[in-house]
Length: 398
Image (cartoon, rainbow, N blue to C red):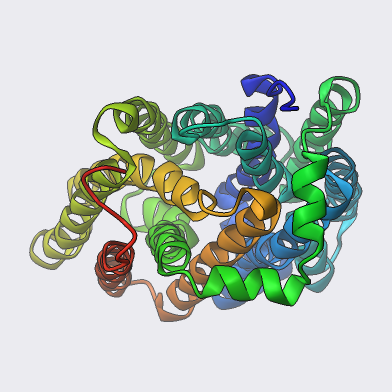
């Protein structure tokens, strides 16, 4: 018997916990560099450690949820997120903060993994539309996070105090999850999935071109985003002369575009098919990659040369992310948690590597970062071709 799907709002809020915790620190990186007297190559680990925490935990979370259920895993992860937020708040050195951020990322990762698994548990047909709604709500988190972070910095001055916000957010999300989230794991499917070892589950997934291609599409999409995110606050403040409040407002505007695009893509997929929506996003993403390098190369680093390609990039990502993640979990409902966790983990590992690469390459010049972003969009397209090369996939009918 299929359980009724929990509130889309609840799943969206739970999914938003992780990106909120990530985007919140972006305006603070410059201040943390000053506070700890550390180079930017070290400070960016405040961001990338969080990403790697998410990536490390997700396959474990997915595997465990296929065994013990979605609800206990969701609750445990949120509690871990809350505890790590307290440690981040009181961290007095960079090493402690980076370790706490890694743990915070592990806890925060439950929302997105469990939400996708829950949607797959409770949807008989195409899950792209409900997932796009969850992603749209989730998209509000990184939209408001930099603005909230900038406000906290202006009010308190101490960058550690931004973690008061993640602490409160964790508690606010935990309460409705405790009282309103039902268990959605089908026990019959759970018994089928539990007959497979974790090794066998992941072996089956990694042998699928559709799964690997979809995961890489998501990964390289995330990679271009993180490559920019890692240096965004510094580029806006030093190259463009825009303060943290202005950066937060611009970032929020871009996230609005992402949210609208995600909703549009979910509705469109029911009419023209999942892969056709993904293809449109891939084309837009390639255009963004060409523009961000070309405009920076010939016009230099200015507001126009950044905002034009970012507009295309955020619109593209709204179309790509929900379709790629839906495609990755579509083939194996009996191990939806495992496929959701592994696809997210692999994708974010790629994104985290691009974040580190961007932090290492950046020496005050934005042009090399644009090249990294452009390369990422090309790899995204090649990953899409891997999906379409699967003989079992009819691009025009999916």
